[in-house]
Image (cartoon, rainbow, N blue to C red; front, side, top):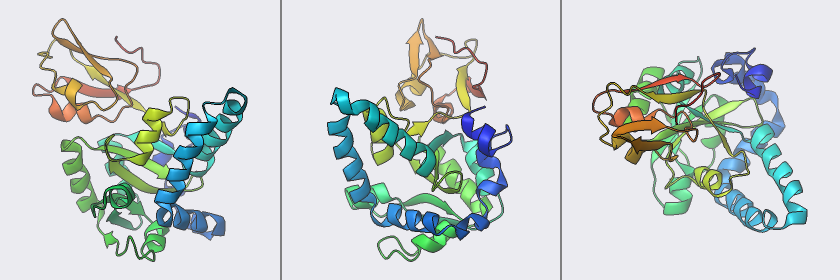
Length: 263
């Protein structure tokens, strides 16, 4: 259980609580303007974040204040959390509009139009009015589930993002190579850009054949091979992607809370 579960989920997985997806949250004009600014000015906003971080986090007298400001933004304004495929599918099953939109990272950084971000509720309405990203494509929960499964099999990581927490507006489906936010998370270890998921991967040593597929698939460097057996370390973010690449199905997801990871 994380702080978000306590504050926004009554002690359960907060991102599965329907109230955090509710359209009544659209009454906040501040939130609507924030959503528009994130999608419309994505490249500019995160380019500025990187430049500021590069400077501020290297100056001892400024670093503490900069960390406080950055972490406040990635908690209260635009908070990201890794979720497993199963939870991503469950989120898409919560009643409301579900839509696909071009990934801002792929569009603004690489000039590619790839519809792989999933929008919820009035987020789609707002983004549909941004010429660079419109039109969004409405899909049903079943289609979203199949879409997510296909991405998962390709090694894609699913993260949910808030727009003025706790409103959840999008599932980002990306990887370490193409995602600006994953780049920030990897580059600045002191920042809570993306939070770990509620589960971690666990290997059944009796079944594991030590092939190393999971190690190659893991984007968080959370797998080591020792004595021809895979081990999950505490770098695991709980995305569950490694499961797709295990030929003997030796990996399963277990709750993070109270678990001592086997090193």
